[in-house]
Picture 1 (spheres, rainbow, N blue to C red):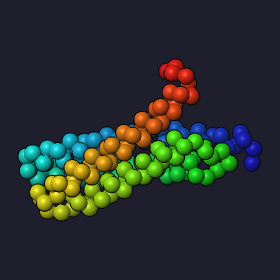
Picture 2: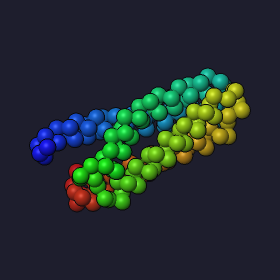
Picture 3: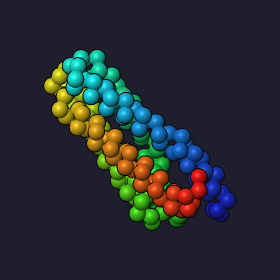
Picture 4: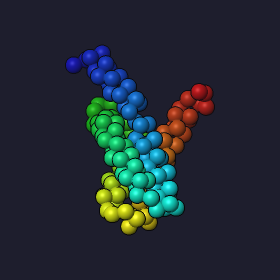
Length: 146
């Protein structure tokens, strides 16, 4: 198989990755906001809403992470850059924290309060650091030109 036959697939994969990758971040930030609101208000409504946001964030995180897994660890042109692998590991850590957070949210009412906020903060911070790592790498590659 020649290079021209491989390119359309990788362009499609990169396009799908770039389209779906930011979506879970929005869901997880929303869940963090709702978890903080639950902390101060004690209302079950915010807990249930955060639970749904975490679930949707995890569902939307599956496809970009699988594409990222293939791009980072397999293929003839796999990148050996430490920043790309660090991005992968930070995203994986964020997803693991979000899975634990989903289990915590399955508990009753206000009993989840200390753990849900901590796990939401870990998830959002890991995702923010992963985005920062890629932004710095892109900034260095382009020489600061947008």
